[in-house]
Structure formats: C-alpha cells, structure tokens
Image (cartoon, one colour):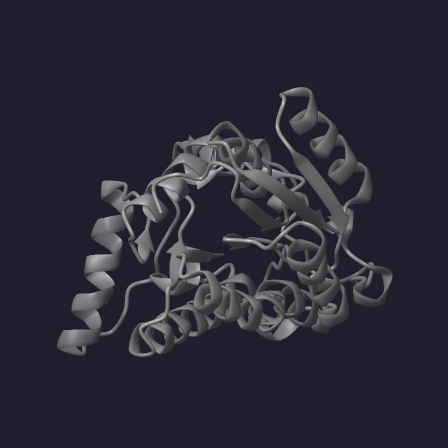
Length: 296
C-alpha cells in the first residue's frame, strides 16, 4: 500500500506515545483515523487536536483487555465507518517491576500480560476475520501492524522480565500470524513494529496512571521508581551511562515506511543494540552461556 488517502486506520493505545504519533502521521498521509484508548481524557484531547489539524478523526474508549470492547471497536470501524484497511495493535504498558523476580507483585504479571499479550490477541480476534473477509470481497491489501519490542523479542534485560516476557510472547504470535497469512496467500499483510532505534520517549514508564483498581499493586510491593524518561536518564547518569532517546514521531514515520515497503521487520537499529543482538545469537548458535544485556 503506497497511498493511505481515504483509508481508515484504527490505532489502539492511540491517545499517547507511539499511538498518538501514528495517528498524526496517518492523518498527514491522508488517512482517516479511529483512535482507541483506555485514557478517556487523553483520548478526547488527541481527537480534538487531530480535528484541529484538519484530519478526519474518530475516537472510542476501549480497554484492550476486554474482548467485547475490541469487538465494539471493530464493529464501529467496519459497520459505521466503511471498513478499515490499516489496524495498529499498539496498546502497551510497563509493570515497573524491581528487585528479584520471585518478589514481584502477582498483579504486575497479570496486568502486563492482560494488556500487552491478550490485548494483541483480542485485537487479532476482533479485526482479522473482518479484514480477511473484506480483502476477499474488494481485492485490496490491508495491513495489520503489531507493536512489539526488542526487549523480549531480541534481548532479555535482567531487570525487566515481566515486560520482556510479554513482548517475547507477542513476537511469537506476530510471526505465527504472518506465516499463516503468507501460506494462505492473503491480501492482509502483517508487520512487526519495534519502536526505536533508541529508547522511545513516551509515557509508558508512567503506565500506572491507567492501571485499573483490580490490578492495583500492594503498597509494599517492589517498584522501579522510574516514572518518566528523565528518571531513567538520571539513573543511568549515576552509572556513568548516557541515555539517548527517540521521539515517537520518528517511530511513526518508520512504521508507515515499513508498510509502504511491505516489510515484516519494521525497525531501525542502533549499533549498540545490534551488537548485543548479534552476541545473543552467537551465544545460542555456539551454546555459550549468555551475558546479561544492559541499557546504554
């Protein structure tokens, strides 16, 4: 797909971070956008800003952990707005885990998997049957992009095993979906987006702002204490490391280019991360003991 003009793009997690930047990049490319998010105030604010920019924008409150709400979102896209040709399963959270793995709060595991993993599965289940039927009926390409992370898909950081585990699972599902549709010779294309090439400056470190009460963390549960990118920057400075960040707008442009180029692996490497991934792959191939990866 080279021309997004008039196409409807659905973006989960569309009120902030990469999702918000995707919405604006798609609007600038001529697409109509339907953003979905659990943060109602940010959702409406983003929709209003999109409209102020002259883009056709719609918004719907949606918790991706709830399959019914994603079905409602898909119904709106296909029954009310004429069908979607671009779907971005982008919603994600960070658990803020800290300390030894066996001391993590159960709710950190449960919440992070519900959003990051089941949110993707729920989005696939809600949209893929409709996308497949539409592709058969109108003989047009459609694109389904899943936001993953090199943290879990390529590397395992010892201080973020909850998040890493969710993104490793997401990557397995993403690749399986891609392969199934490739074998089926479907016109629905699957893409794996890896935000970068450096740590992306988003609100994911403050995911607790949208954490529901039933997944609340106990007051005495270990927590990283990192709520902003600046918090992480200061921590790394204490260890003599420099934090380099990427703006979400850059990620959005990488994402759209990946769709236009029909790429599965949608990412840009920084040399430090690439070297660490190569070291990990050699460790697997040569059966040498792994070396813990570090940020920076």
